[in-house]
Image (cartoon, rainbow, N blue to C red; front, side):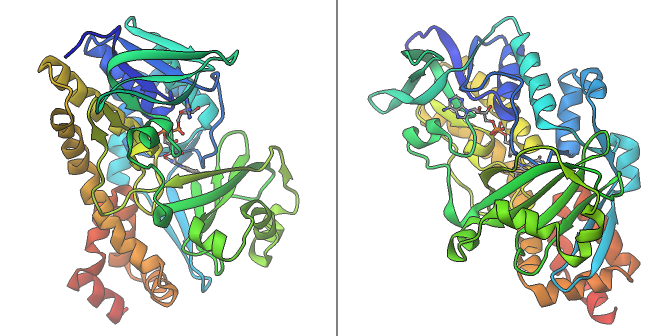
Length: 410
Ligand SMILES: Cc1cc2nc3c(=O)[nH]c(=O)nc-3n(C[C@H](O)[C@H](O)[C@H](O)COP(=O)(O)OP(=O)(O)OC[C@H]3O[C@@H](n4cnc5c(N)ncnc54)[C@H](O)[C@@H]3O)c2cc1C
């Protein structure tokens, strides 16, 4: 393995990149952490943070910093179906006792906290305002990245391993030959902040409305009475029907069931748009000769649910452990780095496979209507909904004979 100025270059300092750099530094590795933005920066998101996220925040010793951020505790999810049925799903009480609630925290604040934690590490050098164009190869092996600094100067950096943490359009993934966008798993989203929406502060709302389903309209309370309001749709559906998510977002707030709740509301931000490719039940390569991909660059967001912040951090940590092991073995070949693919899939494979069952249900409106209607009256089904909201792997129980029987018998 030829020597390089850094052990690892991490392209992108969002949740995946900052977490990866943090854990690499804890293992004593020298890291160059690059981002085209200057922190604090916003990211179009619904701002929800589950236990996948908060457990890692605690492990990184950032719980006190997290507690100081303005945020909203979340204890339940409210779902509505294309047929207008509603189900309020509380998170499991035992899990709340053990882990605390979920939270909604603005990404501008949360990502800055993670970035500062990575930057504080003695062996991490950060460069903001540096836009990575792509990887540099020596033969087949990735040996560095090139890009432009804030003044437009072209620069190259070299390391033993390059981490693509540069989001859903990842230039590292693309130039390394692993296309990050999977059209059939890609969602287009629009989001804005509103003040004055009538809402329950402890509940996130996901409305699978006719014309939007299998995407949804969301109302997520953040801090100070502000709500993060948005719509997410499969990109194929947007293209086929020539939809404009920005326009749609405003139209949805005017639907009869929401009009009253938005009557005194004021939009306090622009409407931002962003896309994400969520994971799937099919395993995908996320590393190669001299490089690995994490977070959205690796489609690490939980399939269908679209939760990506905690999963991005989780993939960053797993990647850091695999890279450290590869460096210790003096072998950063594709074969050696593939241990990361295996370690990541052991965690996300069961979640994605289980969530495929929920996706099937939601994509079939009459079935979805029926299941939600039944669950609103049947404690056993309501309990399963609560378990799924608390741990995606429980979605595998949706098609078990006992569940189907409960649904049929009402
Ligand atoms: C509308 C929407 C709502 C969502 N809601 C939720 C939610 O409520 N909860 C949740 O957990 N997840 C949610 N997600 C998913 C979540 O936002 C992502 O999965 C998460 O941000 C992934 O983190 P990441 O670090 O991989 O990528 P990012 O957060 O996108 O970070 C990538 C970083 O790379 C940098 N970068 C990009 N290109 C370059 C370049 N060329 N050179 C250098 N740097 C570069 C960017 O500036 C950025 O800082 C949502 C996604 C969308 C689109």
